[in-house]
Length: 136
Image 1 (cartoon, one colour):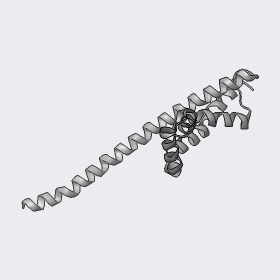
Image 2 (cartoon, one colour):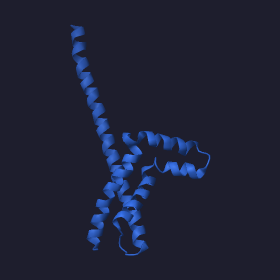
Image 3 (cartoon, one colour):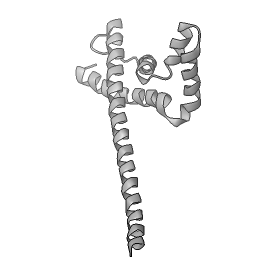
Image 4 (tube, helix red, strand yellow):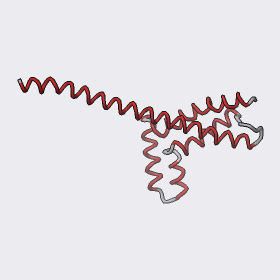
């Protein structure tokens, strides 16, 4: 595979990895299992159990395992055709996927901030006529 094709695969394959990792670790659809995993990661006596359950609450940690699954499914390797190519691909996929998730998080945060500002402006506009009527 040419280097251009490998780089294209890297950036495209990172998208579903980021999507799965973000969805499991942040979205409402997985809230109950995530809360269970959070409790187990904080309260279990065994360090192995705590670390195992922590994997499902951290998008960075979880993205490593999702990357491994995608590498197995697609047989994707980067730069080299042996085990080193799989290792390089794994860490590269994780890095790009986490960059995507960081950008997505910042965009979501900005959208939430804008929505809150709009709600405040609308609320102030609704209150303004009431104040003016009270003064008259």
